[in-house]
Length: 374
Image (cartoon, rainbow, N blue to C red; front, side):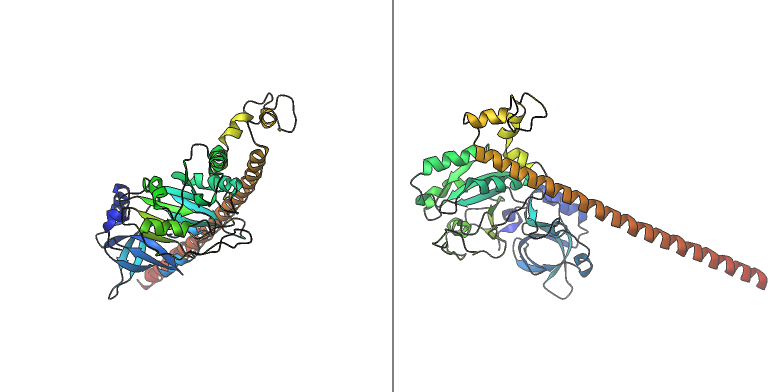
């Protein structure tokens, strides 16, 4: 990958962060792929392997403490070798993470330092707006530009109705209907790319992310598969996260399909996704309205007159509850970690005091012995 640092997304932000840690011996590079504890990195004019020092692999509860695809690193050249050691990874200006599947509290960093996040949905048998609302609720926490991409638009005869339904749940997020196999429909997406810009593609398996990346690259570089005919569900094609430079400028990061995407309990993504519901709640006659048939309930009135879909309100309740549970678990985990750290600090303090006391006693004994000898 020989496109220079700026072509990879290097800018004044990262230069300032790098200057703060560089002692004149370090090299900046970006993670383009993660591979079993190793990082495939690009320095802008060469590709290499970077590894964490052994001690850095220990004691990290969340993958957020480790580099991920899209991160910028400060590397030290391994003596008499071509590989690098990671000495620091630079502060991120964006991050998408999710809760680790099957774990109540741990988070997984998915991609870092993107300018736009494409939330890709396929307009085939597996299409539904509930998934879009879930993705939005989590993706808002990245604090970067979100874009809803409806791929396989050529499969729908009811595209105007689909667009209307998606825009109702998208709020201020732009919505684009495209076909990866029709280059003319992708011009609207190229607007988000350009030299130094990074776009990450997030979506379930089978929505056509790899096909979109191939369309941007102008070649079939990534493997693609057909969805299962029985239910339209996708098959995993991309099995790792990888950064790809595109000929017209900018870089794309194709992410593996994520069928299970649980909220982390951080940020206000649910509130942001359901701003219309939050606004209606403020119109209720009573401040403590539970929206269960009380007099003057604005939610009930909006559902009855069609201003708010009952399914949207139900999705709001579901995601709000999931967010609250995840937040409580995360806070409990953080308290437990803080308590363990305090215990370690106390033990280290006691050990240090004991060592100091023993040293003082030893010095006093030596003084007495030296005095007696005199």
